[in-house]
Image (tube, rainbow, N blue to C red; front, side):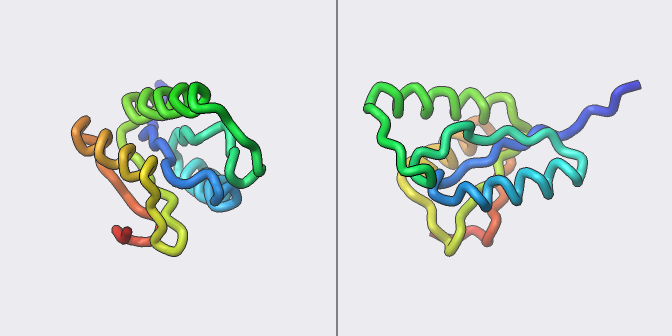
Length: 105
């Protein structure tokens, strides 16, 4: 019988790519299914259009829908506007929210 693993979506600024990768590995090895951004435009210094940004935000909301909880990558306590919107969305959806560095803004 297959075990049902908790699904966790990582949220946070894409400037913290290495933290996403580190947390993803740690949570996966703890027995979770981890979903995270696939494009790190801030960390990789890529410009994206407004329409691409809207697309990525919509995809991230669907990743939150799939998840049992979200995990906020808030290095140095940083939570930007997009992440704040994701937290609000997850709250409305009744998702558990955990923070890498405590609940700071």
